[in-house]
Length: 194
Image (cartoon, rainbow, N blue to C red; front, side):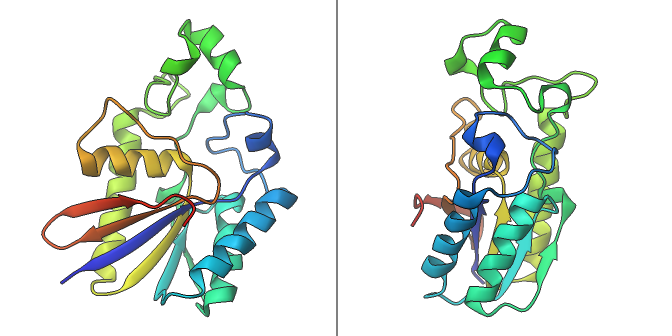
């Protein structure tokens, strides 16, 4: 019994363009982001997709709805567990601003290493939330191909969990896709923006 899950990062927002960390802040797609969603939809229209799930944040939800229309899926299932990590007081700040607050060099700043405080979701809680959502989606969709539209941090968490490598988090561009498959255990394929 093989399940396949494609995970796509939403299209660009103005905050992505300006290098601001978004977290739970609900920003809409900009014009480039809408175009990225349409390009993703065109690429994915050549394969069968049985269901689509998305984070409840507008940037992911809108990307998913554009793709659903192109691939003939009538309903996007919204799952708030697929949200980006809550970055609390760091939301809306640039990487340079966050690095200055944390006192770390820019190359050390990742979605995992941003740390936690009273306003920032703990990394373990975030990773467990994502793992739980994906495991539930897989259980409900065995022998099907599912698309999840979420966030770069979600994709980074999934790659670290599956590869059991928590030291080198990957970064994902807007519109990038990874392919997860499950037979006896999870495997992951990085396919870029396909």
